[in-house]
Image 1 (cartoon, rainbow, N blue to C red):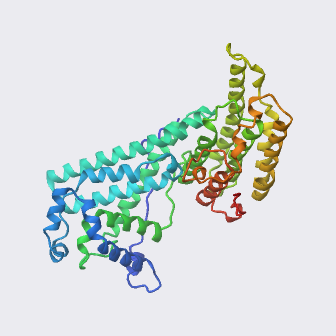
Image 2: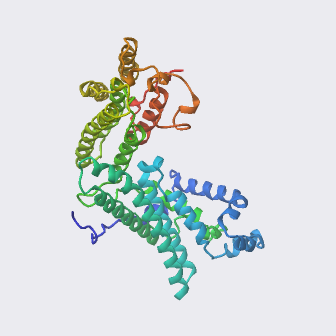
Image 3: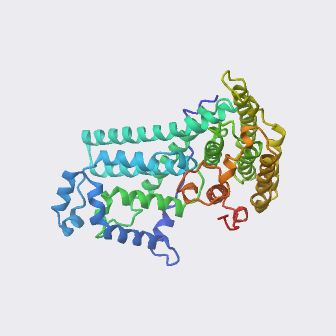
Length: 438
């Protein structure tokens, strides 16, 4: 494993002339957007301030008139407990947000630089050192939580499926992206210190409103400059991290904890095929590194084999359990049938025929399951009390994302698929727009 601890950070150049001209360029909407944001912040100030400051600080703000705030600015005290809360809430990664890790990295990096710039302006000497140390510690803890949340889930999943060294590689990739985003924001501010267009105006008091300054900073860098962050060879790009996270999410949502002996060949085939559909989309995604594409394919193949073997192991354990009286209820899955259904779904995805999957392949699998039930199969997985039973029933309690995202249901699968396409590949032709079964 390479050690990327001492990479030279690539330079990020910004053109000061462009942003200055944005103030007078009638064709630029950026300055107008900032002005609208400022007005909205001022309108909401009465609602926002109590949430932004400690009780003591809020009392100080209440004691100031609007004229005094505009003349002297907000109190310079930084409410670090609230900063840590925001870093944890907005910068943390829940299961549902694993694929959006680059957004969280971007947020943490921009917040770090926003508060650093504020400290540089407002503090000196030992007091400044103390404030910077608090910033470093709080953002450091936030970044550690972020990195661990991703590595311990996505990285572990990859390593369990024959991809060695992934946890460390992902950790290094996340760290490298975070460092480069910090550098990007820091260089931008050094060249464009008045990026919010408030110096010398009646709105200069907003300079200590870190919520406002952070939002404008992210907006400025994302809208004005579109250059990519350089990633050293061998590390994952932001798109790679998003794709790996989305793939893990689907495996976790539908399959990782799928352990029941009542799972039929048809159901497991459709579930593995659904994961395979996402794989096919990712394999053709522009910008995704060939390195990750190869690993995703290997992970899918390994995981597919594992799922069939795991369910079969549980079938054998149930069949030979000493107190089992109906051992004819249990038998190994026909792996060829499972793989055939999965293959059909992947094949139609490669043809971009998503409608055929939802309106032909899945209904055919359901019909095949029903036929085995009707002929009176003694196997547990072909009884009427099965997950297929409610697959086409409409129930608000089991639709995604309001209810249970891991339930085996037609509506849930459609909504999850469309969300994946919108977030990861943004290809409208792959959206399934047919009416959801009611």
